[in-house]
Image (cartoon, rainbow, N blue to C red; front, side, top):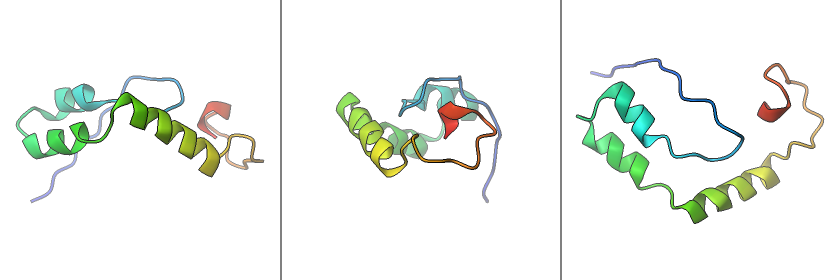
Length: 74
């Protein structure tokens, strides 16, 4: 059976961030499969590459209609 939990992550600057420890602190460390999935994702070079790719795919310079959260969430 599935489950769901709502929680907030710490506020960070724009970009890709490692959040494994925060997530595991909220959901518990008994979910090794989740930890493996999250941990397998990113070296610092991959985070830099992802930031670069996302800036190309979704540039902040577009004339965004939805700006409720502010310019850093465009």
